[in-house]
Image 1: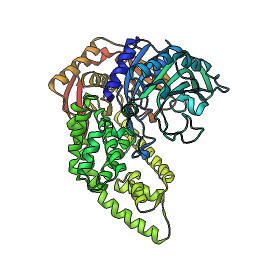
Image 2: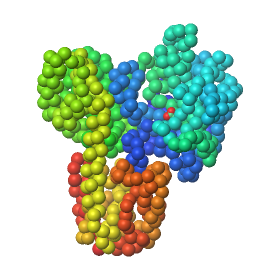
Image 3: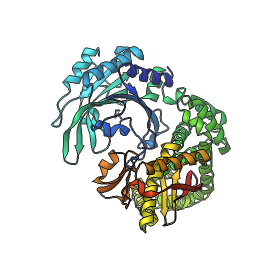
Image 4: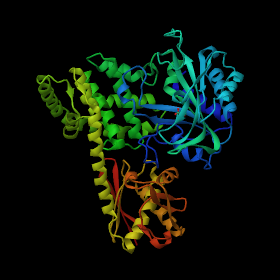
Length: 583
Ligand code: SER
């Protein structure tokens, strides 16, 4: 069964069981600057898990584009991926353990046709925070899981929380027996010898964890996640996701293009290319900070491995075209963004090629020095210098180091890198503040107009629009935002009309104070979340806009007069600039 068929079966199955199909949120969280990328299907749903009403109801299902970077160094082996797709279904205070387990069992055995002998499940063993999950175990027995196929584990295995605090609870995981021989008489689902592969995780999310400990949520939720690539691999009887139709065309093409045969490099190229394309398509651009830095690392590492296989770097364009064609059935946005993806990756490649030559020379010089001194560790300072001066991502240095038998001290690099990021952020904050420095009556009006413009652009151009900068004088406003193409006259007019409509609607502008986490949960937009303290001011304009912001603002949109866009132009790569006035 191909991945897209699995996805469709999943969504249709849960639809038939009363769930609304909701769209995947973008890979770059829309209004949540506290995380870099969407890492699980539940992430965009946190407010609803906490009790807010979801417009599509209490039973939801979707496929969610996810990116996890903690295992980036493992990519190249036979299973790790950075980008993956998570199929999920949710009960927001509706059904709980019994129905959730019954549906999972039915989906796996009837819809996907997995023989029951191949399934094992794990449930929470219980501790001082939460009792042993006999309920889940008995639901599994009732559903049809075989005797001896239910295992009890503690918090390490059967408890799920995203990060340190938030909604959480005991989970039950489903495992697929690949049929490989057991590694020992004790071989169980928790063993990672490869016999058992985790395929689905149902979290019974009824707790909330904060610094003080656990409390009960208002409602009992279910949050499930099924990794699509892995399921496709198992159902197709393949050893790795790279052997499925998702990666096969690009893997084959790489074999055709390469002069050196290294399977790990081929996998890294295929994997990082797909992830980079997905990030760019959802509005990400390479930079030296946060999200942009992850993208930069992915692209640069891919290029480094193309060099390793001695593939002509001009072939990147062919590889992108091939991947768009392979994946556009699953992600139509790739087709739409084909040219942007190409130009962003090629531009980053060109930058990297320019620095690579210098960096490698420097690297070799330093390594020779170290070797002559009888040392075999490259310290963090040198890693950082290669990064800072030569644009060398530490992974690349690490790869090079391993090739010449050296070790690297990542901890020290991480420390220096953090300091560097903090400095860059402080600089950016200064700039941001500068943009709002003086606030007379006109500036205050422009400031409110900025929030309306931000909201209007999102409606007209799409959710990828985020503020990238702002500058206000008494005479005009300037607003920079993420978007790739020139706005059409029609788009400009629609944007103007929307802003003017909101002005005419005479909407009150509310100033609220709340905890930063609450604001993030409410979906408040913020350009630099780090610049704010624990308690933040949020400006809310009806249902139109909610932003973390220091103000000041007018008290009603009707005070703004008439809004007019004077100019729309490029500001930098992937960023557009609007100059507008109030008349
Ligand atoms: N949130 C859980 C996970 O990521 C289930 O979706 O595994």
